[in-house]
Each structure stands twice: as C-alpha cells, then as structure tokens.
Amino acid sequence: MPAPTDDELREQVADELAVSLTHLRRVESQFWEGGWRTDHKGQGTYPENHLWEAVHGYLDLLDAARRLNP
Image 1: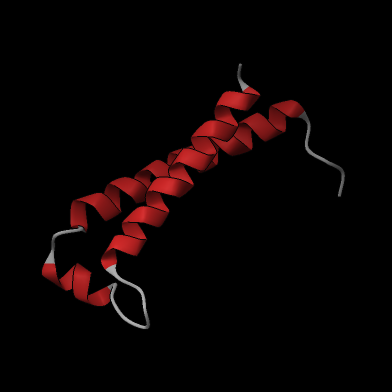
Image 2: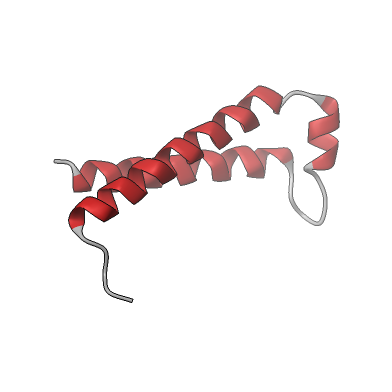
C-alpha cells in the first residue's frame, strides 16, 4: 500500500486521538468501581496498568498530532 498523504495521516491521528480520549475517560471513570477493578486484574496485570496504558496511549497520539500540526 502507498504511504498516506499528510492530510490522510493528520485525519487518521485525529480520529485515533478522539478514540483514545474516549477510552481514557472510560477507564478513569470506572477506575474505582470494584467490579471493574476485579475484571481488570489478574495474570500480573492490575487496574493501574490499564489506566497507565490509557494515559500513555493518549499522550503518544497527542504528541503525534502536535508534530503533524505545528
């Protein structure tokens, strides 16, 4: 496949940034709910890992968006 154009890349990153923010907000809002915490624990993973990963995923995409839109 050909590489995306700059406009296509900006649009893709913007879409992914919106989805990532929605995910981050969902994880943050459910973080202290006992059922959610139980469902997101096990095999060496803790609820904090999910929050940490959501934050870093969002920040990575935010940095990419800023590089594409100086």
